[in-house]
Image (tube, rainbow, N blue to C red; front, side):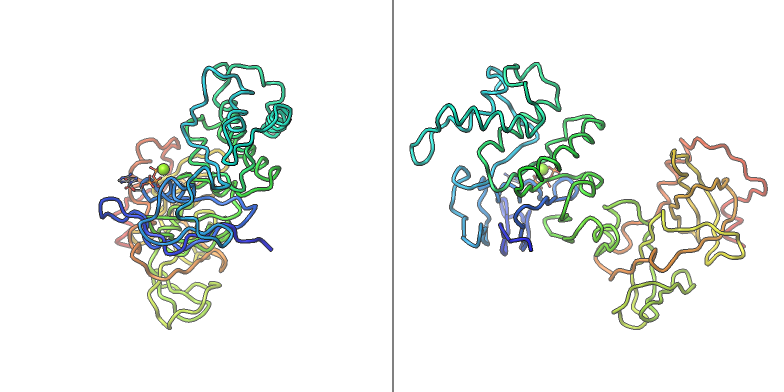
Length: 388
Ligand SMILES: Nc1ncnc2c1ncn2[C@@H]1O[C@H](COP(=O)(O)OP(=O)(O)OP(=O)(O)O)[C@@H](O)[C@H]1O
Ligand SMILES: [Mg+2]
């Protein structure tokens, strides 16, 4: 069983009267890789700074191991931070950059012996896969190597929690992917808690034990990557985590939902009879079948080759879905679709209902750059189709 380490209890943060974190209640477990995920400005960095002790919440409590730490300054918390702009000391070599935190005066006035410093720095270099780099000047290192030095510098003090604020933001995509795996490995090797901030959903899904999805200073959902992806709480989460078609539905009864006037089996329940709901259908969960076997039929308005699959945009009664398929479906063709019960996810209506999940604009964008030729045989305009 994981043990609770940090808790934010009824935490609100306001700047000049404007609330940027709204009554946050959340706990972070020991030895967990936890990610704060959300769009720019949703309050991720603010939450991290409260945990690190750089900000005091306007109201509410911060607890560490059950003890209130609102008034404990950053250097007295067993928490360390890696920022996006990690600012290594350019005049010090790799060894001295990492040793820096061990050389500064302790609160108890004691100094760490040179021998121990050396041992701990070398151990850290090994953890971040930079063995043999100790004499190198930091300016001679690549971006990824510098990032590893910054992580080693933060870990050498043996914090119980490492806070990482978009630490891979400055790296190119390839290096980012490598470092994602590295960070996960380092977290497991050190066996401590990582609280990681990103606005990149794929990064969050790849690395985290737990994801906290935020929007506008409010936590929208907390869960494992699988829970967040497969059982999003509302249209915001469904849209933010991966591609989603989100349509209006009516919950007929447990296990049965009506979409576009057709009834579909699903696995969800616990709604009022005939309750209006939001229904999420992921692009990869839609099967294309011959027209007469289709639960619904639609008109392909766009196709884009993506390497492993095609992205097709399909018009169902004026509502455009994104479907991913390995079958080539030319523009203008009519297709039937089938969705298995576990491909349908029913959500309560929320303030985000109707805001996301329609691919009409996506289609317009892709019309311009579509790289698949227009090859429909019995082509039909969208207008004609709607008149059918
Ligand atoms: N010191 C401050 N004074 C006034 N407003 C602030 C201050 N710090 C943050 N804010 C505001 O609080 C909100 C949340 O900011 P925060 O930096 O936590 O967002 P974020 O989720 O980290 O965004 P990003 O992904 O862009 O880094 C923003 O609207 C920001 O302008
Ligand atoms: Mg930020």
